[in-house]
Image 1 (cartoon, rainbow, N blue to C red):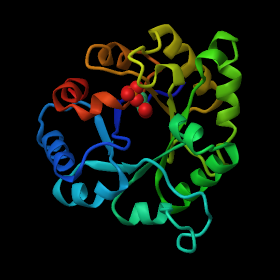
Image 2 (image 1 turned 90 degrees about the vertical axis):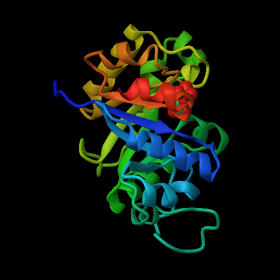
Image 3 (image 1 turned 135 degrees about the vertical axis):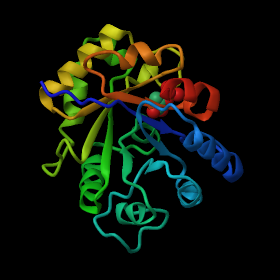
Image 4 (image 1 turned 30 degrees about the horizontal axis):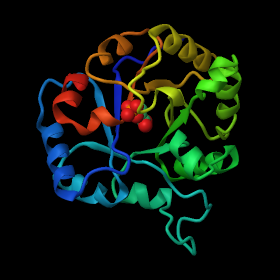
Length: 235
Ligand code: PEP
């Protein structure tokens, strides 16, 4: 089994922060010393350029267009090529909030991943089961089905899997260490890519989750919006 040494922490800011507080937070993070992980911040798209010009933080978008064209009549969409051009190297695809609110299915997610790869972005693919699916013993099947959206262009270099059980996202109830390690092991058996965990990661559980053998990093939502808390995580 392949080992990915340096841990990766991805901050998902979701639809949060106005311009000035976002730049301040990004500045504080980029100027903080003692950071022992690779770091990626995924701000709202409108803030990417300002943060890029004022910090040296590695950036990602939270979504990209599923349409095959880089430019064209797709009102409201932002293409993977545009995301790359503005200075991002990453894009989150298939987050459970997009699956839920925007009805994203495997076909849409697969098209987005293909576009991300074509643009030279690393695609961070979110997978994870609902509480009901877990209680019914279907977690592995659900995740396996979600992994089937990965197009043939996917490689360990251009794709990261984020295991985010839906019942742990924003609920304050993280998955247990055993649940995390077992699912990561299962995913790695299917795809030997970098696998990060997301779902109610806080400064008081980050260290033990990161110490798990199957965990290559974290995807952090709410706790990434608070400098003191996030700094403890990335330290
Ligand atoms: C997320 O939405 O990707 C996430 C992990 O959120 P939180 O850390 O707030 O649970």
